[in-house]
Image 1: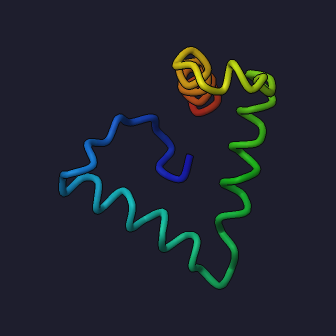
Image 2: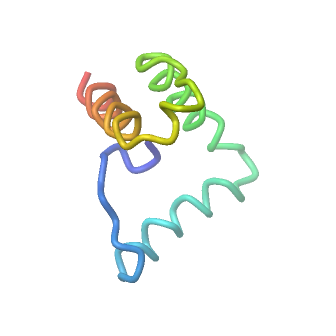
Length: 75
């Protein structure tokens, strides 16, 4: 949500370092800019619904979150 897009980032890449740096900078900010990001994520989870323990372990829930994030960003 911080990047305003949904990406699949390969962990051993320069893109991953840049992606993580923006997240770390937000978390370390004095103005607590991360709060709005967490609020957006909470809205997305509410769109999908809270999963059961079983659903949380399955790829389907992750996919539903990604799709909901895309819808949220594009609205």
